[in-house]
Image (cartoon, rainbow, N blue to C red; front, side, top):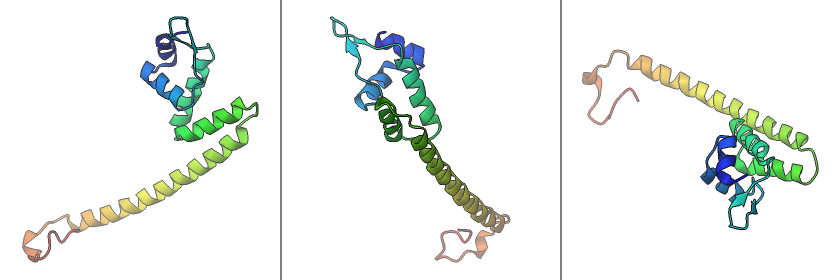
Length: 129
């Protein structure tokens, strides 16, 4: 299938497909005699996998690693599990940091609930921060 057909079937753009090909996420397409890219039907499933990996927060480099394992004839299940474990740990750390930030900002907001500019000294920009 031509690049436009693949883009439509995969819900993406031809520019994205060329980028995926350049990044090694999509194998180089065969070329027609007139030079057009001609993708195999299984390219749709591969692009769908790339999109699912991105939705899970994996980087394109990580997705490329998974695809390389599969292309090498092995199941990438353990590698995927390890990547998901690491991603989950990152998210949990981000949640903890955001929770702490939320507490800090809530405390600052309570302190600024009744602003009184006359209580700020001239050397302060704002006493509430």
